Length: 222
Image 1: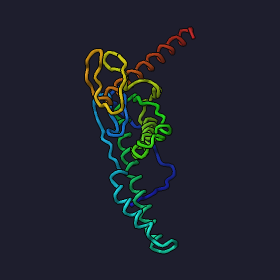
Image 2 (image 1 turned 90 degrees about the horizontal axis):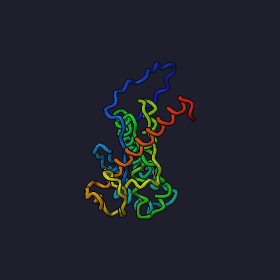
Image 3 (image 1 turned 90 degrees about the vertical axis):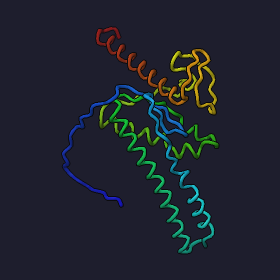
Image 4 (image 1 turned 30 degrees about the vertical axis):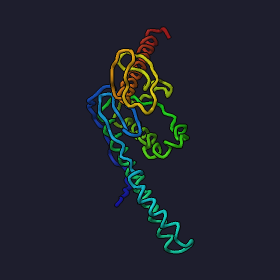
């Protein structure tokens, strides 16, 4: 059931949030929806994948109905309801996780992903559409405007997955390899955790450069 309220002159107040963490980096993926630089992991619920069998069954039945018949209309409605349910499940997951992180972390670092370009990979297109990174990032930025702090994006061409978060050594990292084994310092770390730590470092560098620039402006050296 859904209820919609239209109200006027509703008093509002600024939420007071005490952040648990100052700065963290987030790395999103398909197998794991999100890995935080503090080590927390959030699994991908795979809402579309879980409803795929039921969708296929309903689509087969729908294709056999006579066009223009009442049964075909009913079948179309059942299909639409299942698609809507999957969409709302995904949105609910995104909203709750984005709100949680926005209330816990003051400054959040994410990658500026080229999602439209990634969807062109036909092997990953369905999984990328199902996971919905763009929607999650939108909710994350929205909740940050409410609870304070900010979301900082790092460049999409930064080699976060190919750089050792311990010593900074760069090496090739095929997508199939899930553990980053540094050829220089021999450190072994989860691929996604390594990337999230690198994102955190890039965000801190951005903040330090911005603060330094502001200080020069204040002294008249701009």
